[in-house]
Length: 603
Image (cartoon, rainbow, N blue to C red):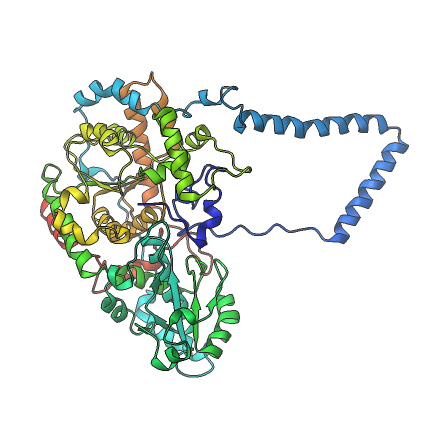
């Protein structure tokens, strides 16, 4: 899967190598794309002119007093030191990140050099013979606390909320008009846009037109809403909350020559507030009867009223069901993974492996390919991003990227981590990924450590996958579903895919994400240490697993209008009410029923 490159995250992307992050790194953790990224920082408060003048007068009087006291000589001496400090600081930066960083030995800092494969070869005999402490998948997770549901549950009174809301805020009965949005990015950024669009439609009492998908220059997937999601399920599950239609009425289409693209595009600021939509967007919607917002990624703040927040929950976990072709094949893949995991009670581990060629190039990280790999990556970056990495203000420091944990994990690093945590070679592993960079070479050590290694390509027949070729979102939907129902999910780089998946797994597993999110800053130091013993490495990995377990069940404290985290990554407590309804956990595919029945029989 490729890193996303679109209008809504162009600012993030432009900092790829100057700050070590790719566009897939956000949210303060290894996040690949900006959905959901952190809210924009608050602008700095600039002092007024009068304040500056008062400070200047104060400093002037102070200086005069010092002169009168005969301290002028000391002040000038101190001033020389103050002028010297910036020069020392700049010199330090040049030594660390400038062209002389290699000369000054920056690459010798622990964790800055990729030596993971060498360490694997050195430790392989110990790994191969280590069967003493195999970790049982049924007992991986220590914490299983059930999250308390808010009382009363908003779901039970949501329709009444909307009825009262429409009566109180709308000037006239009926809808305010039609809302059209263009969702951009890949599968899960589009998913975020859809959930936000439903929330905005509910906020404005608008009729939502089935969202349109932009053709992204990186993802190059021409799929539209109906190709990915079940339209009937979407419309029916939102009845009583938001009215959804497939297209505009003929009368409005005639005004715009039967072309939605002719409707003027209304630009909404990122993370727009409820007051912005009610004060700025709603009057225009009432006047024009239709409004089109594009792009629509991250155009609504996370702080919204509870009945509007609930719309996001209903959309994400109930209304958005993959289309029948995707659901059918996904069900088969889940069942096949269960069958191939008989030695572990039908349970398996899924790994989101971000080690495709474009991800390696975009991350600006260096592995073991030497000068040849560097030239290849430079050429690929120039081809895909047209001089973006050659700007004068850009400083590329691969060693610094690695130290700060911003490099995608390689397959051998994932294998070493999982074997160190106690998963033995009987563990079935599902790899959720695009085309792995130099797959034959890089997957070989992972396959040695975990012979039961599977992908969608190995589980499905060529005929089954043929309709999905060239459609990255459809392929990602298959990976999403198989990963969703794994006992353990491993995220290696971040992005929208793992952020949504972690949230969905929190929702399904009563507040526990059952996710391994490695501490990559610590991991790279351990993997570069050519003197570390296998036992010492295992001890560190067991601590890392316990930490992932502890963080996996964290639920933010949400008070009225103060949510700061993404509801798509941390859906509880607001979405917990949906778990108690008739549809329970709103599974994406019927394959989950197979998984549940199998788990029940093995308890």
